[in-house]
Image 1 (tube, rainbow, N blue to C red):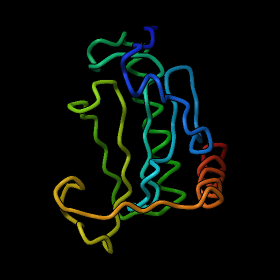
Image 2 (cartoon, rainbow, N blue to C red):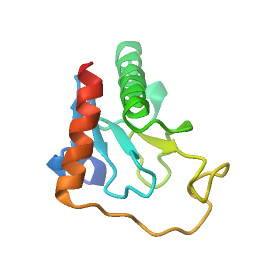
Image 3 (cartoon, rainbow, N blue to C red):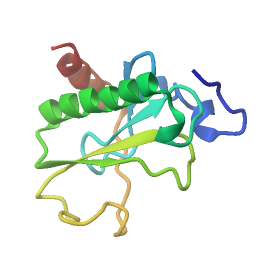
Image 4 (tube, one colour):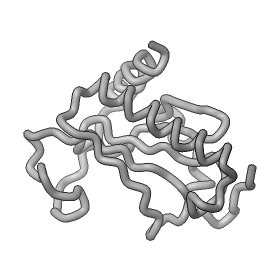
Length: 142
């Protein structure tokens, strides 16, 4: 496994804020996005700095992809979206991390990528985040 990169914002904040984390494995950390405009929007982030899937060993790539799938399944069971969006971009933050975005037919951007429109951020109270974390964790355990 690789190392953390001192000038990478994602490496520095891998486990912060701690109250948003609901999953950890050998390869990944799963946490809620502080912006919950799309209920359940989460990240699954590689625990060390690599920028491309092809840079990972077969074993680590399989583990990272399985973690993403396992978290996506738990998010789907928790939030019952109409569709799950999966994005692995890295243009702005070149550190492997999945955006898992539950999408709902009721959202104003249904049918379009989440990056295309202007929208307000939705912040929750600490207690609301903790409730969501517990709900996802219960699905991961089940």
